[in-house]
Image (cartoon, rainbow, N blue to C red; front, side, top):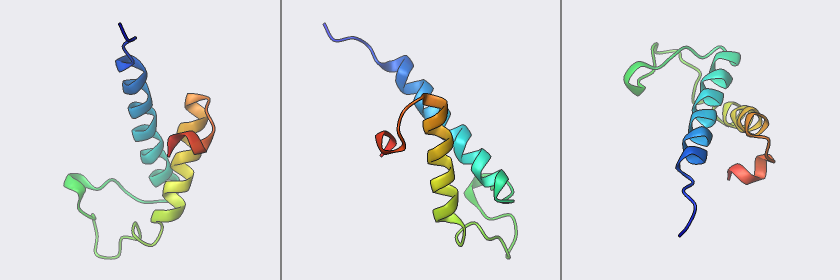
Length: 71
């Protein structure tokens, strides 16, 4: 019988989500209720690559794994 990895998966998903929100906050991007930009001048798309890279760093550090293992 295979070992259940559900708790590990939930921990990883939570770490990635938290890292993404932290990276957005660090970049000065406000929350996006309902997935919509909160203002017409929102810079989220322009900063998407740097936010994603920072979120990967944060999540990998929290999980204790190399960034490449998140991909």
